[in-house]
Image (cartoon, rainbow, N blue to C red):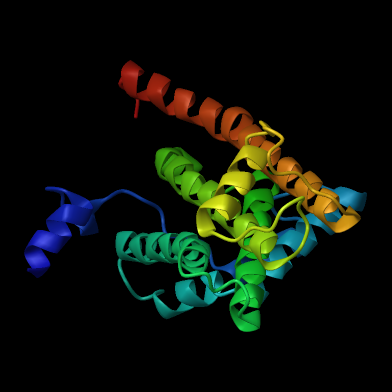
Length: 234
């Protein structure tokens, strides 16, 4: 069973032989930004980088990295992927079972949503050193993050009275969140108070940032990798 699972995750290759450099610990990244050893920044950009790199200590992902630090690199990456999938499933489960009125689940939903936003900005302002090897993987994970944001906002809309009609089912909440995130807006659901309008603005800005990150950050890197492979220099 273990052999088949390993082949499912890693293919026919030996996971120990993948040429991926070891990841840098979050505390080392904080030190690098603080000492300006890798980023020549100042002023507001420096403050923003320090905020982003330091904020991750309040979220589970770096502690997952600490717990798995002695595992092979690819095993650590797999655990990270499971965490992203878990985060994506949480708001969908809350919506499907109508659990948005449970306060602690609502708080967890907001907490994980904030972590995802910070992840996106980290990818823009604090890119991974080994992005060339993992660009395609990052794009796939970005899609999971995008659907997590859609579902998380669906939970927020379902939990409050922000729209012209009550959100009584999970599909209504997911539907309104998706058409808002896609900036379609059919008009059957729409915000009727200031809080609802602010939420819509925040969600549209967040999904636009995802599109910006995808097309202007990851896509050029994927093209670079393709050109390198085609040239046979990798």
